[in-house]
Amino acid sequence: MKTLFEEIKASIKNNYNQDRSFCRPVLPWGGVFTIKAGRKAVSCTPLYVEIRLKNTCTIDGFLMLLYVILNENENFPRELSLHFGREFVDCFLYLMDTYSFTTVKLLWIWDKMEKQQYKSEVHKASLIIDLFGNEHDNFTKNLENLMSTIQESYCSNWRCPTRVQEDQQRTINIKCGGLREFSQRIFCHGAPPFVVLNMQHWKSEDLAYVPYYLDLSDHKYLLEGATLFNKEEHHYSAAFQIGGHWMHYDGLRNVNLILLNKPPEFLLLSSLVYIRATEK
Image (cartoon, rainbow, N blue to C red):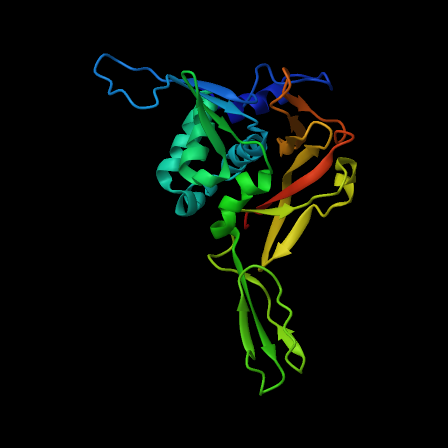
């Protein structure tokens, strides 16, 4: 049985129509999960028999990119298991490959997000989970441990009360009456399989001008994908490379996975995603 990743690659290879799209929807917007309760099920208060997801585009694009990343390198599932947990990675891949897209979203919500990151309410017999907001709050914020970095700085003034400082997130600016020298910023837990750069105001057509590789902590990172933002619809989508081709994913559309000849127009770049190059 082919995986979803293998099916997508095969669809690109076997179809020569430049406007081609994948044969079935992938990670459609929202989702409904029906709770199957048997006779011996214990009732709960309030009682609900289904879970409805709304505004899931704030995690959909990154879930699609995460799936592609996990399939790009045979070592990445093992490495990411150190951060996400082996059970999460195995379950995530299984759910994606079996087209259990609502369940895979619930896996991320309940396993990786905190309760205050989303709104939920019971309406009639449904638990409604609303992910409206910013994708950086709903997804990349939960990757801080994976991508955390540290940098030391030293002040030339021996009397400086904070002569040696460590910064785990961003470059610090301390007035110490002397010159402050910064060491190279390094990853706290070793070079991660991928990094996410927060981009807010670039247009997607500027994708041709962003660096296609980065040198970070003695490792080369290659551009793998991007998340995009439609300001008018307040909606996120994603673009990624697979088999040497760029594809655009938009869970809100009926045909939601298409091959790109050029970056989609009138969208803003939200994030750039780079994967660590394979060492030869």
